[in-house]
Image (cartoon, rainbow, N blue to C red; front, side, top):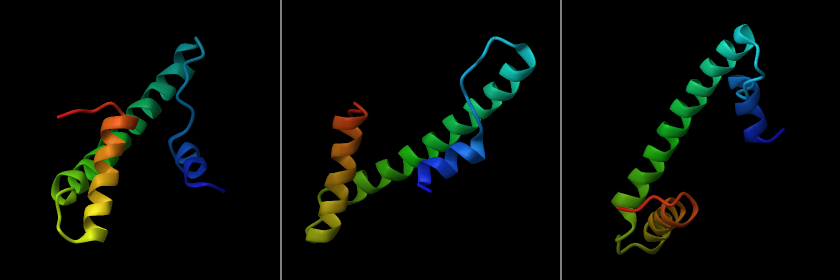
Length: 78
């Protein structure tokens, strides 16, 4: 089982189906998933900000990877 499968199982379905009771629960699942993504992006941003200009190659590599992920994959720019 992949990590994404575990997360999806823990958060539950997020797609609305047009039935109020079900959609209320899925809306809460969506909010939970969005909170998780916010925490994860904040963690990645912290690595990018702190380490992308480090003189140590392994530290710099992590910082640059995080920075590239944020800018190229997610489209987040400073």
